[in-house]
Length: 437
Image 1 (cartoon, rainbow, N blue to C red):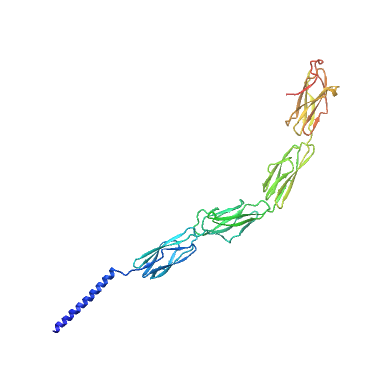
Image 2: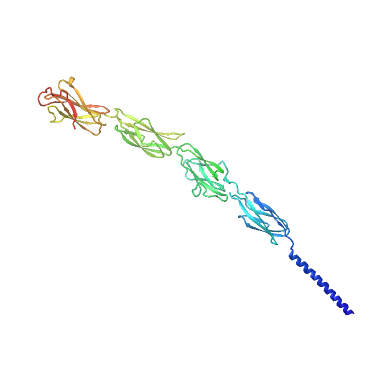
């Protein structure tokens, strides 16, 4: 009986242990089929301003999670990069100084593999244009600058430099006056400025304007240049000029603009204004007056402090022509003709010339001037032939020559007698004078 009792106890114990093990196995099998749920919730999107550098984002979860950046921009970071349960992450970045918005994708994943993503956007920057040193600046130059001066500015977009006047020149380190392409980050740009040499004694001012993104923002400052201290001299200051006219050269030494002025039309200058030192050719026109004349030429430079130099041209008086000889051509006297020669010296071309011829003893009634004209210069001998004379008649002749200055008459007279027989009614009673061809 003891043995059976002991066996029954062992059987009962075995059944109890088996039942317990079976229960544990069933519970474990239910857990793998129906796992405990994981919760995860984050923002759908985050918007940051261009100047904003941090943004907090809430994470709601009942399990551990990790953060990753799937697409972003340089300088974007997140802290912390992991957590457990509800928490918060912070987005860190630099201010956006570009004219383009930025976007990044942030991914959060639980330990069990649940994943959510959200997009972070950062707005584009406003146009940035700042002159180093602030507004109201000016660059000041001497009258004859040797080296450029410079200023700097920062800009985050395209830019252009313009000057108010053509005497102001400005350029960057590469010689450009425009930004060649869009600048994606704020950066300093140095602009060099140099004006032309000023050519007056009056100071001048101009403006340089920096324009960003087609005028969306502009900055300006002043360029000032002092006037010159005028230096002027002329050499020579006096000329003697012959009556027939000639060319003279004056040397103008000046460090600025200058002008020429003269009071009449007796001289002509090849140039009447210039800059710096130059030679001027002056043409003195002929003086056909019988008295000396003077012409004054004035050189001036400057506007406020005017400098003046004068040049005087003294031109000799003109002289009348001189009839050096009046002669009869031997063998030229015939029944009705006679030929004469006039030799002369003249400063100017001859206007009129000829002879006077009359019957001897009857000057008051028959004296007559017979003349011709010639405007050519360089003629120093003229020939005339008197025709239609009476035969066997004695005549008296004298010559004359004239130009714009005066007249010269021969001091000697010529007496000659025509040949042939005494004149008849068919003879021409009035002598004719024709120039010999």
